[in-house]
Image (cartoon, rainbow, N blue to C red; front, side, top):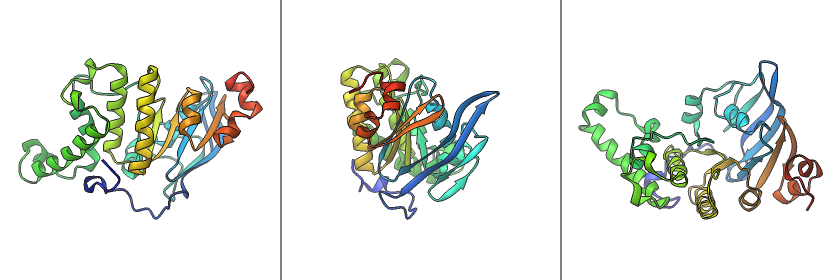
Length: 273
């Protein structure tokens, strides 16, 4: 699979060139009752980059992803994506505008096969009405065939052909995470949000997932924002890193600069290098 595959050519033509701003988070604050989860955070994500969000447990990282794709609505601030400014956005609107994500805890249909789980990621790309889809006839059948081609390409890309018909609930955790990545890719996002994509994985599984993330970024041209606790992975993958602590931004920049930031060392890394 490559960026020129005809089945994967429906990216948004947003006029944003690689290296230009795709997402801008502007002075976002989020509270739950009297508890502040995020306080006045601003940062951007450039088209084509891998942007890491790191910080200790409870730093507000997942809350930040939930704001970006509309699960949470901030009390203050705004999100600008592909030039469109929003103070509130529903998850459906985020998905249709080109934002897709995976979750900290795998969110798959356990009784469904790998293929059908990834096929579920094509839902927003299907245009035939319910009547046609129910009968799986005529235009709806042809549409399904085209979507299945894309799904099969993703399965090949992620090297999971051997489990394409297996119920995902029977799969090892590392493979479930790979299937979830496949479902997110099936939506052909401009911005892919990954919430701890390597949590619970062994070293070999982390190496595989790291390779797939790099390939998604380089071959698909997909911009990625990811949360990850493994600092070795972050330093290897990320073009830029933002660091959160107790809902506030304490660092933002190149991986090597963030790693040398004393505030970050004190809050997260624990030791000076």
